[in-house]
Amino acid sequence: MSEPVAGNHNDLFDIEVQFEVVTATLEQADIPVKGLFLNADAGFDSKAFRGSCNEKEVNAHICFNKRNGNTDRDEYFDQGLYDHRYSVERTNVWVDSYRSLLNRFDTTTESWKGFNPLFTIVGF
Image 1: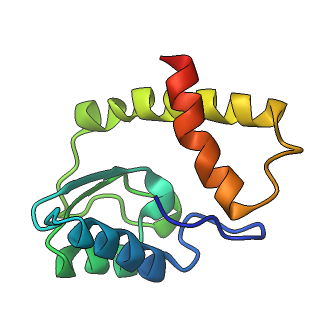
Image 2: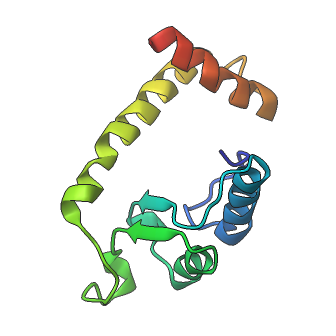
């Protein structure tokens, strides 16, 4: 998980730096990033981000963003596999619904990060 960034930003804001932080954290934990699979939505469809994934040899399975123009590209994309992201997105919404109840306590980065395991324990 990357650190939250203050402000109203799109998904690609500072993505190369955030991706480097996340992959470095995995590598510090002796989890190799080479060959990992990344299933991302169209908000992450950019040449720069795909390039970052290729440099780390991460398999980027990113939905094509229609706003970028040509969606008939050579990159592999499987709609059925992409549709499995729903369970992850549903979980994120569930966690955020708890957060909206406790937002007055959620004022620092540490509290934001600390509530995620707490919500996971409470929900399961």
